[in-house]
Amino acid sequence: MKIFNQMRFISFIAVLLIFFLPEGIFASSYDSGSICSGDIFVNVNSTARARASGFSFLALSDDASALFYNPSGLPTIRIGTLYFDYGICAQEPSSNESRGAFIFPFEDFSFGAGFYRKNSDSSVDENVLILGAGYRLTQGTEGSFLSIGANVRVNSLLLEDPDGCEICPFNGSDTGVSGDAGIMVRPLPMVSISYLLDNINERQYETGLEPVVYRRSSRWGMSVFWKDTLVISWERYGRKGTDCDNFGFIMRSSVPLEMMAGFYREKVTGGLRWTGRRFNIGLSFSPLEDSGIYTAVALEFFLETKDREK
Image (cartoon, rainbow, N blue to C red):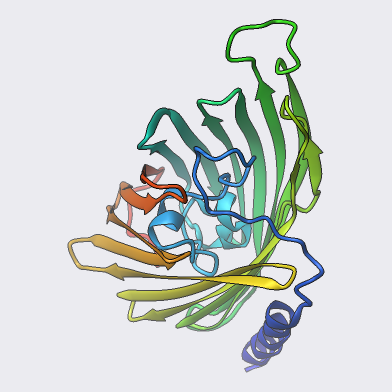
């Protein structure tokens, strides 16, 4: 009873923080756009499963991609996991991005290390090294919990003149340090709520032509579960005076197979994910802002062979 009362009080405070924070505090540039776009670092957290579910993955974040998307979800991982995904832009095959991570779980604490790399047709490539950790503060009954998480990212832009000019201003690099911090609360087994502050250290980067600001953003979301079969999610990100809502669902069958779909910016996303005892493999499709299709594949490999907790 004491644990239940603590969970109820903490959940109440978390809901107040998530839904009543003044939206003008955090300027947002969160953009689930294309790897073909000229924006910088906006796709670091756009993992394959998040894209397939319409970027409404914040309050779920129950796989190794949580290192990139929401580190407060890392404590849900109970098995050492290797993660890799790869995405490609249909109309620009030479534009691609990849991520890799290794998650080390402990009893109430999980640690992760990974990288993100974006190659593009332009003169600017992106490289990110990331270290993250999540801690389960409170464990209630029937799967309820409260967790926090954060990561530190070393963001690097590699500037290279496409014509090979060694003295052009394109050549060189620009590096900065930032990170994300989030909270996740599951007051009941069927409800999860989460908040994330993305890119805490807002910074200007040189891109060879003109400086580009990688801005801070904030996101919050909710997921509702039904019998380990259906997950319905909502996620919101906002600019000062502007909000945008994403919706998605994940349906699990006994095959075992996950069917994912989502809706964001008046566009529909989708994907499939096969879940096994030794590894998971997923495929996602999402439309790009300008036209075309972004395709991504993700692979998780578990260091132990056993059924995973959902």
